[in-house]
Length: 296
Image 1 (cartoon, helix red, strand yellow):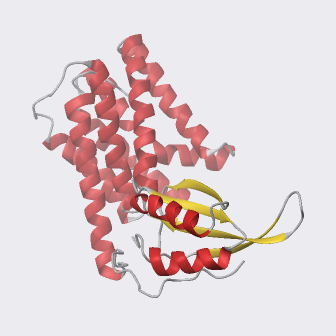
Image 2 (cartoon, one colour):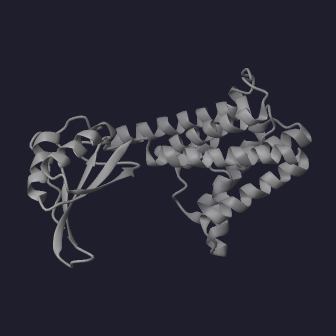
């Protein structure tokens, strides 16, 4: 496989890499801001509609319903011991970033618990609550942090049981949702499942990026001409992959090029103008890091 060729004119629209104190400051901001977003979604959508969609946040809703304890106090009471257990059992990876998230989320829940509730429709609340919580968690993860909670307990269980982490998380969240069906109602637990599903999808989107870049694989007898056209006219780099035909066993070159969504039409037209018989496959790229794209 040949090294990726770069265009003559470098693009300067990339995000400048951040290291050192600036990186630490950005991570801290993302953890605090993500915790704030989670708290707003929790208080505006989940708590008023009694949607306990897993985690320590879900437990705090059940405790409030059963004993009248404010959710922020329950979250503090559970998050801090879980953080200490994680630090002692799992090691130093539960440093200041995890402690910050474990403290700031209940703090913002406490500050925003009197904000006006926008809807009393449980379906809307489960969807938008899931979006808000997922967005907040995704932002915290972008800051290389954690809000603690049952994720720590899941990792402890994984360490001693050997089960997959995703299974441990699912079992713990499922237990909370089952308890919601008992403490609240079966209908509430069904709405909690919707919210949990939406949260997971939004976390994936935030972690993997919202970018709309595309990866194109081009097979042609005129790879050199197409390469030159991409480099000169489209101003994008490319990589030449060594391949072998499945039917003929002939050696051939496959061009791989990553482009933005708004460049895909130009790329197809350019390839067609050079070789109308070229075989082109285009797929989605969730996140692209490097020159000409994001560097964060």
